[in-house]
Length: 189
Image (cartoon, rainbow, N blue to C red):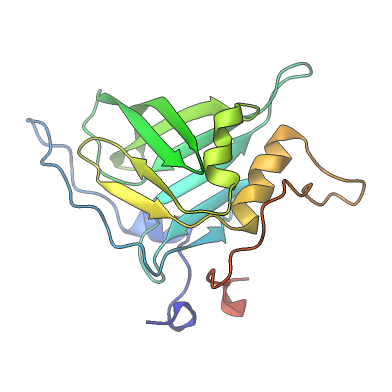
């Protein structure tokens, strides 16, 4: 199915697609979603991107949190999958010859709990997300996402790192544009 036939993932779709209430026992693991048609789309929140399949609830949000005067910003990952209240885990991101192991916690968003964690924007292992090759993101019980990087995700990380040229364009990190990467449809504006 073509991405332009359905709208991109949005924050509003995430709110509409509320996850089921947390059970008394640990949740059953979920299957890894099919991400062959997934792509990055801007969020209604500045400095935040959503990754998901067209017309469906987002699978992942990537956001930049500003740092202080002498501290770098951080990148916040929100995996839109049911998490049990009070749960914690390690999220693994593997790709482009880098590995990130980041603690994530169940965070209440609306009426559901989802997985959320942060990493310093200047962490060199964020290159896992900025290279030319796909990367995987895994949380035990929440399945594995296979993610195609694109210029939007690279720019968000560069912005959070403060790597801009005089025109406000993210500096080229040597990564070539992905051939065949899904483009954001014009209707997503």
